[in-house]
Length: 183
Image (cartoon, rainbow, N blue to C red):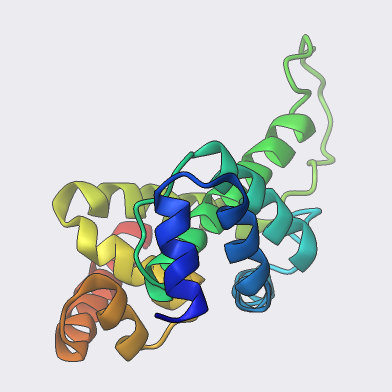
């Protein structure tokens, strides 16, 4: 049994140090995953690569014992968590820009507040992925692992327990659905 297999078993059994050691073992992979995510929207959040990894770690800890069996599944789950961290950061930034619950007074001004169009795109993609999850959840997993996680077809196939050809078909279906939904 490899070190990671032992750590996954221990983490599934609820051993407190196992998750920390597993996180430490996969830290480089998680940083690469975060770098991939932030490269697509570099200045939309105040998070940097390390901040995204650490925020994701805290959310992973909060979720409790993880029913994951290998590295591919762990990275797929981490990609989903990182996506939610980024979406939450964009939502928080928009809320703060709108006054965060402050009483709004109507003003007649021709100077619009600066809005990054990529923020809307992130939220649109997130909403489309939620719609897609209602239709076929596996397609969302493929998108999260490939687009957000940077995993290749073989790694995704291994994580989902399907063939690489199935992953390729799922990726194409998901891309078509998202193109229609976001357009």
